[in-house]
Amino acid sequence: MAKQKTIKTQTPTRAIVSSRFLLALYAVIPLSFLLVTLDYLLLSNQLRDQILPKNPSALAIWTVIFIFPHITSSLITLLDKEYLNFYKKRLLVPLLVIVAGVISINMLMPLLLEENNFRTVTIAFFVFYAAYTMYHVLSQQFGVGMLLMKLKSSGATYETWRWLASAGATLLYLMVFAEYLLKGAQLGAYTVYSIAQLLAWVLIGLASIQAIRIAKQSKRSLGTAYICSNILMLWAMAAMLWLGYSFFAIAIPRLIHDITALTVYSVHDQNRNSIKPRNYVYKKLAFLGVPPLILCALLAIVVANSLQCGGFLLDSWLGFQSISDCALSRFYTPASPSNALPNSMQVWLQIMFITGFFHYYIEGFIWKKDALHRHHVSFS
Image (tube, rainbow, N blue to C red):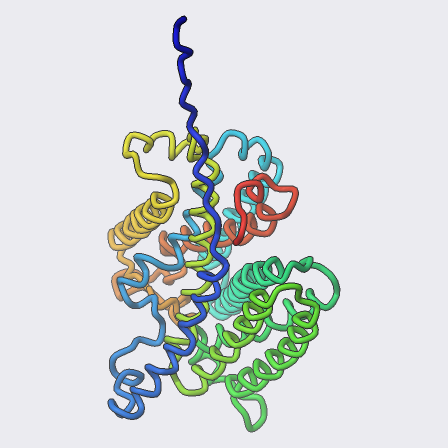
């Protein structure tokens, strides 16, 4: 009697987002304060005043890993036939609107408006970008917190908490990137900077009260710890700015947010493509034999830095000097004596704003319960 042939079947490699790992990312807060303490005790604040830049984006190693890579990762994950068909009604028109809006404000307005009017438009645009950025960052962190507490991300208390925190964080963001503008403007006996600082503290305080009300409903202690860590993050940002360490005020939320996002996308891509690659990019790279769990972050970093370097190269040919610190005061100033065009017309800035806005937009719906992305991500 012939032996029956055994058929070997490949089982999916199911990856899970470690909730404890996501919580551990907040250890950057006490570590940052430890560095501040050592700087004061041992270095007479040399770390603050001479070594660290005001913005971590001024460090090459920072830009290689953070900010843009997690944005490109979110866009790469859409390069999937089923996903494109599922989301297509929500992608094309908004993308065209974003492209038209960014190009109009940054490249057409300087040619059509007088300098003072263009400056006003630029400031309004930057404030909107700052607000949308902080809303996006905190929406992700708060959404994960609600999931870990096993509560619904909805209701008046949650929305009030999110908007209060976003408003406070936006003011802190502007205090870094529009520092000179805010310090140069007066309202009575006070600078706009000092007023913004006080208002940020008030808003974060009110957001903390809302967070406590939500945390009392938590069904999981780890989720409660995660929510408390988010509030601690906001107070840490405010404290770092007060102490003069704007580097840490930006680095703390960016590190937490970006690594959280890359972790979730890596798990998603692993579960979506582990058996049969469905994403066009992973199909092309299947010959490497690298699992999507690892390839996701590597791919995001390579694509992001290729785009950034390409943008910088085009800008150098056009006579621009890259403004990695993104200070608002440099957006509307001439690029150089040989190039009278304002820095806002840089090619790299158009790429950054367009992909940034589009990323913020799609993140608002691809992780909802009715979206395909949620089918491939689970948390421990």
